[in-house]
Amino acid sequence: MAGRFAAICVIIVCLAGCSQSGNSGLGNPGGVQRIDTCADLVEYLRDRNLGELKSVELWDNDYGSGLKLTTAHYEVFTTFLEPLMLHRLPGFMESAYRGYNDQLSEPIETANKFTVYLFADRGQWEDFTSGFAGEQAELFCKIKAGAYYHNGACVVYNIGRKRTFSALGHEGWHQFNSRHFEFRLPSWLDEGVAMLFEEYRAENGRIYFELGRNDYRLDALKKTLEKGKMIPLKELLATNPGEVLATDETEAVMAFYSQSYALVRFLREADCGTWLGNYRRLLADGLNGDWPLDKVSRRIAKDRNVPRTVLWNRIVGTGLFNRYISDDFGRTEREYLAFCRRIVED
Image 1: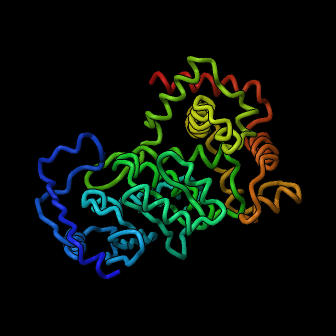
Image 2 (image 1 turned 90 degrees about the horizontal axis):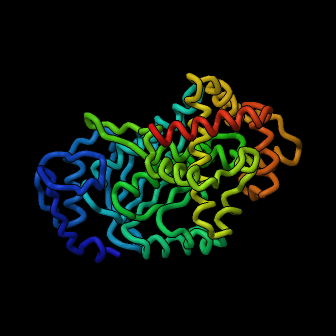
Image 3 (image 1 turned 120 degrees about the vertical axis):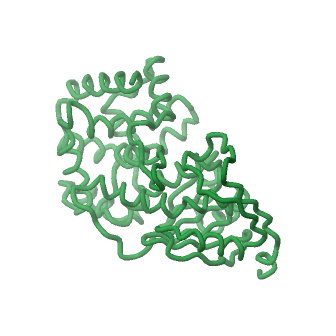
């Protein structure tokens, strides 16, 4: 394995005045530097005095030359060694952690660091997944581009700097709530919140998530509206994404995800925050294990080793909305659809 790290990395850090073709959205740290080895890359990152980076070291693994980056709340194991990416990665992850906490009425603190694997290419990602994910490996390898959360870890590969950061932000929410929430979330809520962390901007060296500027999801929502393919609210609340993905119908997948994103935004933003308190109570009670669930639903909600069945998702997804948000689905759906039409035109 030592031979892997002796290999020449030959990375040119050309940061001043270089075009990024709109790929990062994270800005340019200054300076021009040649980095020939992974050890030199370690020194480069240490010399940057990155506020969120606690340590960086070589990572001995079976997939390629790699580094381990440690922040206050994360350990990132990566074979993706692009300096711009690594320069911004610690700050991005810690900003995401703060953003996840902002969804809660009161912030919480994690005792143990979260684990993230970031691979340079799909081949490394699939090799790792085959050994890491067990029976789930075949399912994960059907993901066309991106990432997954499994067994406590986010596992991502490079799909372009911008999209890779989006995947990290999205899967990081699943990781955060899976560790800290007493109850697992129904799919519409889990996926809807995760998509709030797909869009971001850099300003004065910090990352800010653009919760209302997710153009990819908004474009999909607009197309769904224009084609008259909106999923009825009751059906959306009951849907498991596995059901949608199994149909292999792109329009259905786009509708579920874009509508779940819009629904969470509706609860946070509509009518000057009319539903925001209800939304926060819904999350707080899921965090603390206080949802009013029947015995079977409660057991599945608490035990992550028990599969989140389609039936459970239907019962709990709809029941929680009825309990915490509104039992007048007709009125709420009309307001939700009006909100969807407005945000796609903003």
